[in-house]
Amino acid sequence: MNRIPSVSLRRDGAAGEEAAAPDPAALARWARAFCVIRFDLERGQLVEACYPPGALASATGLDRLVAFSSFPDSMSHHLPRHRSSVHDSLFSFRVPDPSPSASVPGSRRGFLYGFVFNRQRQDERLPRGGEQKSVVILSHAPYSSLFRLLLQILGPLCFDVGPSALSMVASHVAAWPAPVPGRPMELPIGSAALRVHLPPAADDPGPSPALLPANPSVPYGLFHDADLFAAFRGLLLHLWTLWELMVVGEPVLVVAPSPPQCSEAVAGLVSLVAPLLYSVDFRPYFTIHDPDFARLNALAEGEVFPPMVLGVTNLFFLKSLKSIPNVVSVGSPNPNSTRVLPVGGQSPGSGNGINGTPGKLKLDKLAINKFSPTGLLNSIKLRREGPLCLMTEHKEALWSTYVSTTKPDTSVLNRLIDAGVSPRIEESMSVVNNEILRRHFLELTTNFLAPFGPYLRTTTPSEGSSPFVDPPLLPPFHADEFVNGLAARGAGKFLSKRMKSNWLDLYRRFLEGPNFMPWFRQRRAAAEQEQQRLWRQARMNVDIEKLMSKLSELERIDSFNAIERYLLREMENSRTGATESVTVCEKLKGDLRAAFSVLPKDMQQLLLSNPKRALLLQGSNEKVPGLDGIVSQTSL
Image 1 (cartoon, rainbow, N blue to C red):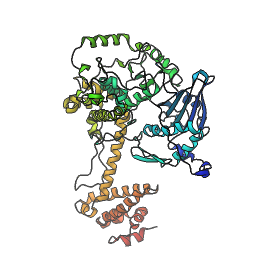
Image 2: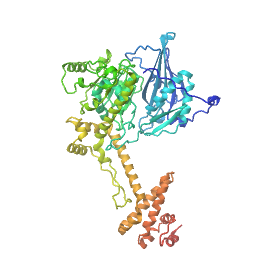
Image 3: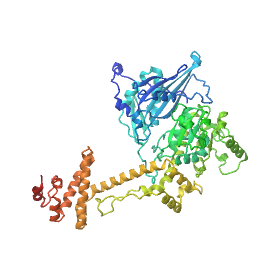
Image 4: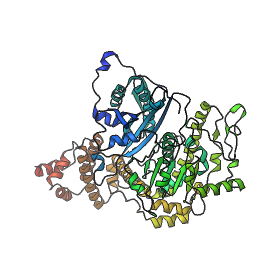
């Protein structure tokens, strides 16, 4: 990445200098800390400045963990020689949250996301000819689309005006409204505004698996802004295998020459399975200083590697984590160049139009379904050497023991556009290619999840029936019955064209993997909540007098008891301040009195023998014939 232009923030005179400190609670809604970290030649990585002060000291070892994760690994290979004196880069990391509040027994493990603006400056007058500093935003939220934009302001600003920029930007962030996950927001920063679409919350089940989202630009999962095409341009044919690995929760080691490339690739993999909830631990940039490294390095021979996706640049991991069954190598040794020569030895311009104008990617030489002696020999050599061949030469490849079910979709690949030699055109074409790929994998995942739709389908009261009975339970789920039913029905038209004969194995692996149960439970809870909402709405819309006229005497009594039960529940909700419950209560009070009015007199007297029920009926301004006298005899 070339140097990112600085964006200055204006202040209004001296009053801005003495502005009140940002509200800590308001700031914590978005970010935990803003830091400047310096690489000291004698002492290593040091936290030079932090806002709020002491934010990293509240948890044991968090300052060192963040500091070590904020610089390119010392053993990263192919470190480029830059012509310019300044090189800026953006990357991200994810580390366990060591704070006490994140380690409550029985709760899910907490993580922190770090978004880094790293600057390497070459200057012969400095010791060893240069220096390194990083500006870091630390947050509990994976809002990469927002924090990448904010870093392009905060990073250069810190180098222009110093650490005071941290508190300056923090004051703007604290003034933002609370995050609204899954919705677009416009967040003011100085004289500008950041327009972002936040990803859905972790407990948001996303769209129904039976429905394909209409707009692929809307984020239905994490890291929707990741540049999928640029990250895997040299491995486009392997995207379907990588999709499977992510769906079933297989461990994957992502190796890249630089932190920006490996963190972007990991983010792209996580986003590949949207809208599926990805429940596997992932680390966009993993270093030997991570507290989990010792545990992973100590795995015994033959011990199963835990489900994780690790992005690394240190080639030491190829030996220390050799039991990981899937290794993917991505990126170009020169981070300033995202162009990758297509397989088959084509020249960069051979797939383009005249004078480097955009053209279709030439995928005919990828030999998807035809034999190539050269390709076969290269494949055998690559497999024989294994990932350790990266120790001598970086190349883009996938090594895996996994037998894939999904076939590459050539119709999708043939729609991709080659950008030519112009960086400006390449950037715009990458946007187009990302849209093509995301639309396809969003549709692929949605169709893959569609067979679970019947177990998540909500119901509404049929016309003429009472909405005051309990809603029916959702169908019970049994894995064996599901697979047997799926085998009888088939994979569906969309999937059958893209899967081999052993497609049922993919569903079995998914059911046994770490992603299925968290996703299914979340979708199930959302379906039950939606069903309750639909039946509640039906109770609000029902004409109680018309309904009662159709019921028998016994059904009227049951309906009265059901209305009373729902009314008491809504009254309890209204005490918590729920405005909607107040409206529902008024409707149900009227329904309760209407239901009471059509009951036999002896039943009315029996019901009103309960003083609380009598007060409940009396609480309405409506008059029911014969009620006033009965209530006056029994009221407290």
